[in-house]
Length: 217
Length: 206
Image 1 (spheres, each protein chain N blue to C red):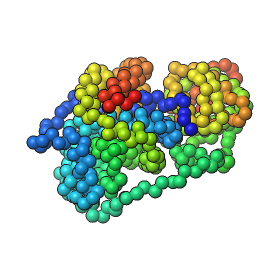
Image 2: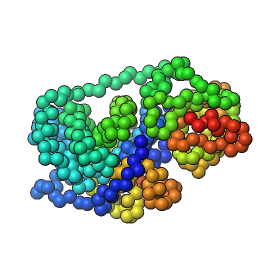
Image 3: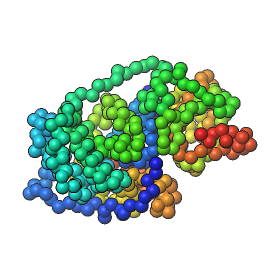
Image 4: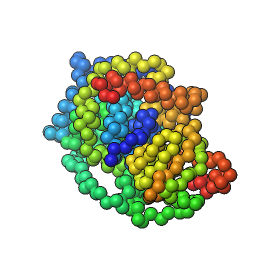
């Protein structure tokens, strides 16, 4: 899978710096796992971080630091190889970055009704910002909405189109608060995506306003 | 959890350290890769302590900038270096320099221990297992450290400031915008410009 819509470079800088909330970091990690291009950009952002750190003057360690460090070495085991999980191409398996929050299996997901044709699941164990899975029926026009803050969405299944283009599995939409968009899901299969937001979505129009309380996840 | 606490700005732009040895070897990534190799092959405690003494204080400053307190920072420096000791065999100088490797380890430990992102370490380890394509693997080999350093020094002060806030105070771009009373778009485009300049300096990568 070669995604066509990528994570914004500034978001990758934030990820490299450790500045993203866990909700956003989860979506970034899910995309990185299948995008060589964004992994390459991240490696560059981390290099910059590493060298910025190297160029800084340090803060002195406490007086006992070396002694304490030496005392810990004899008991420290060695890690010689990292066990890799064999690649699985089971279509039921969610991206591993999502497992702690939604479990590993699509079939086992317990969807909650949110509105006509729209279901959602709120991610577990997320203390910072909001993480959710959304499932939207095929061929459906979502209400026009803007975001109070930022939103990062990755498509897992199905597809949608909006003014920014066609979004298929692996693609991410990395959107600021000033973007107003109206996604239309592609015909065929439901569109499933994982989304991180730092503020509730805001809809315009009366149906949307009716849905709004439900969306305050 | 938010990090809104006002912190004094870490340091004036890129304070240069004084040379610590007669040679300039400490600026050479290969020098430090060699030390880690010595730890891997011979469990060389002297080499390890040299790495610890050089990078420990820098890691500590980075961690304090991220909002760790002094004691947390000292402990995380120890844990970061302990990982280097334990994982020295896994260090691959073709994939990252020692400084970048340590930066990543310290960041991940900070996210896990201080910021309470319980899955940060597992997420990172899963990503580390993915085989990079050749371009990713070659990123550090192509890296011209002196050129990157010049590019960092050459950033216009406002751009440099925002980049430092992004990296050393772990502020989101929205937080930087708020603190500097600038539109978010201005902060993002500044960071994008800095990043483009530094990437260009990293040896012809995109």
